[in-house]
Amino acid sequence: MFVDHVFIKVAGGDGGNGIVSFRREKYVPLGGPDGGDGGNGGSIIFEVDEGLNTLLDFKYQRQYKAERGANGSGANQIGKDAEDLIVRVPPGTIVKDVKTGKVIGDLIHNKEKLVVAKGGKGGRGNVRFANPQRKAPRFSEAGEKGEARELELELKLLADVGLVGFPNVGKSTLIASVSKAKPKIANYPFTTLIPNLGVVKIGNHQSFVMADIPGLIEGASEGIGLGHDFLRHIERTRLIVHLIDTSGSDGRDPVEDVKIIRQELSKFNQELAEKPEILVATKMDLGCEENLARLQAAYGEMIPISAVTRSGLDELLEVIVNKLAELPKKEIAEERVEITPEFIDEESFTIIKTDDGYEIQGPALEWISRFDYRNFEALQYIETRLEYLGVMEALRNKGAEDGDIIHIDEVEFEFIS
Image 1 (cartoon, rainbow, N blue to C red):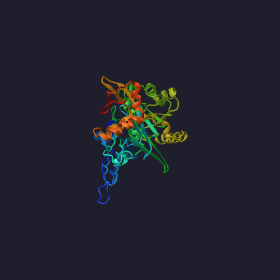
Image 2 (image 1 turned 90 degrees about the vertical axis):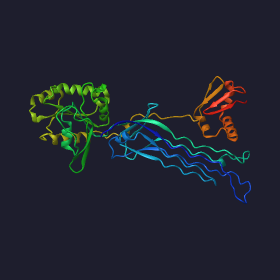
Image 3 (image 1 turned 90 degrees about the horizontal axis):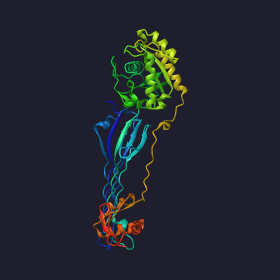
């Protein structure tokens, strides 16, 4: 089964918790804190596998969660980091964040990797909070939550040559004749419901990848028929081979067919209309010389073939190979979807006036949820840290007064100037 568009959920593993521990040795009085840090949670990483050409696996598994890091322990022992979860994807996979709509990755090259959900950092043990004023801290830090997000995956096949044309013009028959691909072939429209890839070998040293794109119809650029589902697969081909049924067996005019297909490509993406194109007149075994002459008069050079009798196939393959040799092999990176860098100001926060005081939000304060604010020492640490970050000063500038309630995530405390 071919699948080229899915939605999934991913979550990095939580960081392990730091712990509160003190040395308990017979001959070491007041041994001091020795609580170790928690290990980091595993990240979820996409890795390109050139052996894949479908997103089928994601149809049956929609959620991916990495393991959490191990908790720290006494004697300053750090918890073990969790292993990253490697998820394999086919080349040509575009990764979007559903919430923001932004493209976060365009994976093309074999073994290329992309971190799609970061694991949380391990929490600090109490030994990390010791200082000359706080020699025996009785609090620690919980592990950071792993990053969680919903992703949209879209696959655009990578092929040198894309076959286009109306349904039933002979694309599947052609790719079956010149490669080892075995597409389903029958004499009715939309036999091909999925793109087929075939490797065409010429002699001992030359080869190219050909994609049999499902038949287009008028209105495909607006999503009619198979429409957008498969037009995307032509976008990364270097060369378009446009097949025209010269027999007119489906009651269409071959000359008009060329015009319609070109219009649909142009409407969907103007760059498609500007790609190099080879026009191929198919089904010449049915005696279509009159229509061939009309096509040549309207559009110039035309390669007549019959995939059934194999007439003209060698000439067609020679023209394709020569054309591909002329085309500069653009770096795929030039054709990548534009990726908007994600920038998070980790020092930013926002103060909002509420009925009973103020609520503070922002990346600069996400660490607060990792402490047990019911622990008096931990709360003291939080307040000291807020002063250092400039939060308390910002509250004073906003007009905060003694007794106002300050809300930060689940933490709630009275403001004291």
